[in-house]
Length: 203
Ligand code: MN
Image (cartoon, rainbow, N blue to C red):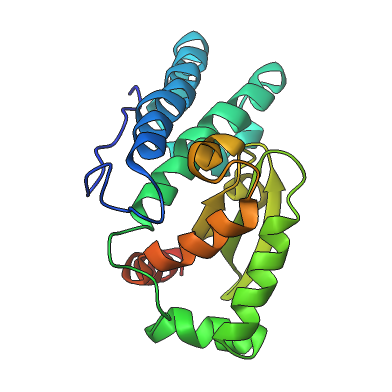
């Protein structure tokens, strides 16, 4: 079962002015597609049960991948799954504060939404080089974790429910070196209903 590039639920220009159309188009149609092509190539060679797994299951069972292919599957399978989550957890007219179970989990872990937003922003600014910052569901609670490159949180037993891509390809055309401005803009497009759905599915 080869993986396919998912359609977005909105147009490339729908997240403007926060994320520009050109960045979205290249990021989705070129960068995401490349991770998908690469992991499909690895799985085609490996064959067997691995090639029939969902990308989520593949990453959660990374120990079943032969050792010499594990790094490639984590990077390219991670790049496939991470971007799947990224597109789904944004929407035009999003942002604001979460409600429901996500709000409760954030308040338990960080005191209030402002405390969470500060901590998440700080950790995202601090990602060295290319990587992501995640809100993870793990053992019934949520936690923030910055991770390098395309490393999938699923390979460490956590379920990603929200993440921001801070590879330069995610923001450089519009924001150049101003990563903090891109992060500030991203808070305005978060699809909290989807984050709630991912948390519910993680339990
Ligand atoms: Mn990316």
